[in-house]
Image (cartoon, rainbow, N blue to C red; front, side, top):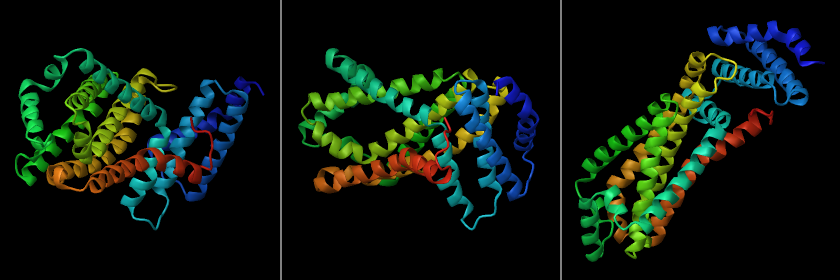
Length: 325
């Protein structure tokens, strides 16, 4: 069947489904299931015969949205909050996985730029981190405690101050996406270059191991969460730049709600990272190495599993591997 005939044959049905989603009309579970099956069949047909067409992209979007509506409206025994964190958001992460993967690639590239810049420009670390921080850290290194700066202040004071700062950085990463992703790119660029030069500074002073042992107790979860928030910003920017079959404004509105859900799930991890920095990192120098690295690996595994592995597992189990690209 030619694509024009395929569209003409199904256009009214697709428009009806789109209207149901747009107006949030309540349908019975059987009706919603029938809609989903119809769309999966149409999507499979389009993937086979028109793999690079806008029709396939449109059906892909519509099928995902019908799926999400099914799992938002059906009666479930599970707690709504559990369903939100362990079904809805993982499926959104799967849907936007390409943006997430590309953001992490950009993260590693930019950190590498920070390392190279610090290596070949002796003044670069002071330019990025500031003279006060560098001088204080050099004194701490001489005193035998490279991460002593994290021991200053009270536990609760550090926890609250650090957490608020991290939450604001993450909020900027997310909201600056409305500037076509350019604002998000700037925040990510600055923080990644700062991280790269920061770690090279400790390497240059011969205390890289000690810095990793202490700083990454909270850093693994903190940096990962902020990178995810940057991905949210890029998704927002992408919804404006690449609206597919929608107007730019409609594309932005539809995307903002979904991405905001992903963004919200990063906050518990940032709060946890702030708690670790305020209450645990300060004792890194007296803790056994296996405890330090145990915390680092556990926290990194938890956040990696939630944002990178769980979405793939959910897609495999729930969607039974339809090609939602």
